Image (cartoon, rainbow, N blue to C red):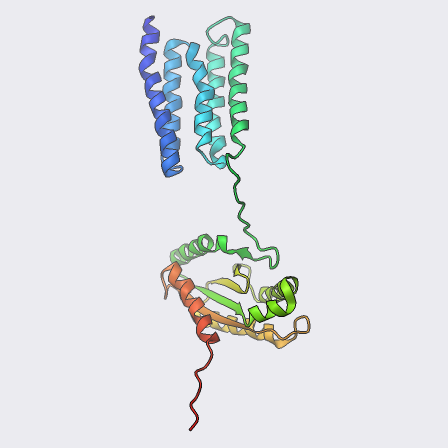
Length: 289
């Protein structure tokens, strides 16, 4: 065995171990450190190829591409493919023949590129059907509940940096089950859409609205105190009840909460929701004298 080949075995083995570790890390911890291992993998392969001058180690490239892409989010694929293409360009510049005559080198070069491209194309097919989660409610144009926690957390973080308040208003349509029974699914959705349109009239550019279930909206109000949020909620409730919607009188009930008075995201949403339930609770019967 040539001395260069023996010298290349150690970095090649280390590269293979780094590739396995990047795969394991990506599977168990998402992106955590996986990119670091991938970069180490390519560097070690480059060292091995520099010492050995190409040869069978070239065949590791499509294998590494396939292994790293298969366990990584698609958004990360450009970052993982970039080292592959750069590496091939460097190898082609350093040794256009890739260890053989020019014709054979070009053939091997394009085989490697094609192998990586085919692997990427095949891995685009999901192994199982993925459920696409809608982020915008088509009836109201509001965000869905799937975006609520992430966007509210971002808003709370920004408010804490600016030392500003951030208030939340929970709005629930009254007697919605009766409405659904009377109007049906299509009619009740039209009613919800009309109510949402009236809510939008009160939103400022930085405000965000979510439809968290069939009869409930959550509105975030950056920069508004609890008192201001209550005034805004009262104005929305009055606007909805002020005139008929599709020849029907509809009312809504509101609950409010404010950060940083309430510091936890879950408690913020819970307090606003509890305010609605308290307001909608029937009054206790008064015993007759």
